[in-house]
Image 1: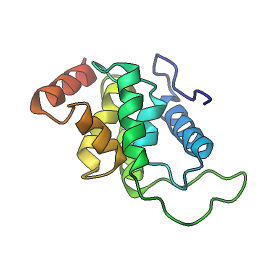
Image 2 (image 1 turned 120 degrees about the vertical axis):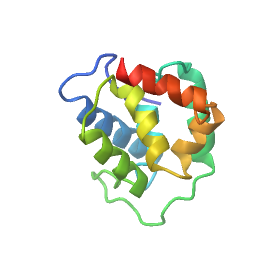
Image 3 (image 1 turned 90 degrees about the vertical axis):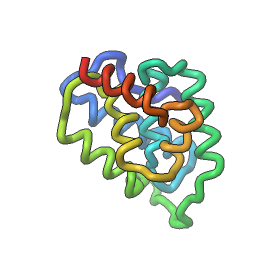
Image 4 (image 1 turned 30 degrees about the vertical axis):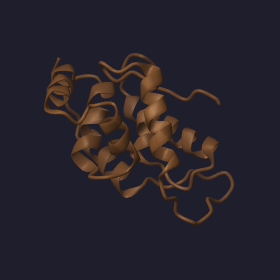
Amino acid sequence: MTEHALEPTDGPHALDDLLDAARAVAVERGHTEVTTAHLLLALRGQVPGVAPGALAEAVDRALATHTWWPFPVPPGEFPPLSRYAGEVHARLLEGGPGPLAARVPLAVLECELAGPGRLALHALGLTTRRAHRELVSAATG
């Protein structure tokens, strides 16, 4: 699998890079939409306090159980954002302190009630209050 991910440091185009990387992951896997799980995969393990391999494994398990829309994606076009991925993207566009790698999981937890991204974060224990506080702390510096 080709690796599509953000650079370790955030820059002025970090959110665009995140979205491009998530779309590339979805296309590579033949998925018909970009979910919050693809956004997490695009971080390539840069989530504070989470081992890169553990994140990828949890996301892969969550994606394996996800129900995909039956519509095909035209050749050469990116799949659309899922509802929740769109909400996460909108929340991230609002900006905020801290690195994108800490803000993405927080946005997934805030926007997605059930879905592959939230399931992966739950499997990693990031839905506990303590883990949430640690993510907030990492995001606010």
